Length: 297
Image (cartoon, rainbow, N blue to C red; front, side, top):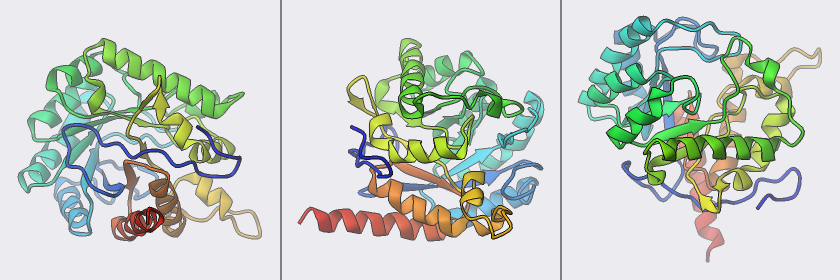
């Protein structure tokens, strides 16, 4: 059930089948193998740099390392399939060989298939299966955990679709449709993770409403699903923290706000938070877990 306006509602923490569980919210570290991501400007575009970064994130405490070869920032153009394959394949292979739990961030079934063959254990599809109809069939056959995100279109014009009457209800209902489609394609419901898609076809007010309504969104058709939340360094935080002249807080100075949200959504029952700066967010979810533990006594 949704809480009062402005509050974060507690949901039961649920873990997807096929991944290690924990008594706290997990932390997913981001490895952007792209030249144009909003957060790091191509710092990890070369394979060796991306692998080193993934290993560093794991050393900082990342439970999962999410490797993506296509920027999904607002306004971004699509990369072609062969280039995405070239970027992602060797990075996933080396990180998986090093023993990391690797997720592949892709909308393409062919890229997901190669990444799974290289050792990835989770498919993180920001389109929720809408961009490539073959994705759900692949995930069903592979029997791997699958993140289904709320999505209304490609990055180039997705903000044109940020029109809602009741954003929490509409996102919940649209996610429910994508989950139903995945299950109809043979995906086991126990491996599905949902993601409200913070920043994807959402205005700042929509993002805040969704964060306050996580408990309602996580319950689809009477079933509680594990949920992933990605707020790290996003523009709605920059807008919130704008200076006196109205200039948004620069991307690199939004980590403290991200940490605050990680603690809040972890306390609200999130399965995982997806972040760029791992170490402080690991601290945040540990604090949230200890807070929850104290509250049960």
